Image (cartoon, rainbow over all chains, first blue to last red; front, side, top):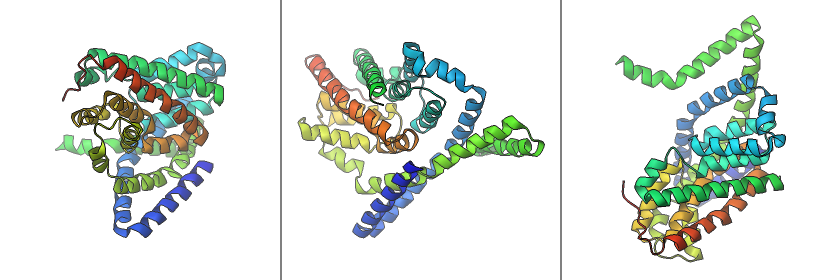
Length: 159
Length: 176
């Protein structure tokens, strides 16, 4: 609920400032925002259904066992590998991550999963090679994997 | 004709079957169905209380800070200002990482430094505003802030490393 409050107050504030500065631009912004929302809402609902189903099928004890605080290096490694290989858009992966946290996964595991998802792309590597060449693409992915692991470890220490 | 029609209703099939199965579950008192429905409602409320507002913010950002305008200002400046510009440009984008490669090519064409190209990719993957919004909504402000503040210096370091490593190695970005 707290989060919703942040978003509502921030969007009201920016809308107000924007409206005072330029009425037409503001309306155009609303239209653009609404269009993006419209494009995303049905796939989003489908994902929420899928996540609800998965959280029912996969028992919380299993998530705690493999991805929880006590899972140690293995859970962390599973998250890093899955995150690096799969290609899941953010608006799908965040509900999953939040579900994992609620079911007992540790912060560092979720952080490394999210970061590898965003920064490392094994599936898109062939495409990346076309742009940057083999060596550069592979180095970039290895460096980003390292960065993601550092982020995960530090988040585990902080939170 | 039927194929086209199917494509059109395809996104709604899940939703429709979920609605029907939920109603059936409640009708016959099928507990797993009820539990799944309740878990869905919870996540739906979680989503609907912030996503529409997020898109208001994103839409306004889009009209006030058009990407094309910022792209124009990114050139050979590789000082702090250059870094700041590529990070801001990356923050305004949306979409998956492979969508960033064509922009990296544009940056390369415009004479951006190697460092800034890789800082752009780093910022693109971790700092996009719409994604930050969703992240705050789902994982909380504290998590998002911690992750962002740790990631920022790290991918700037990656940029510096790449520049140092690739300086005399004929680095180029290809058009695909």
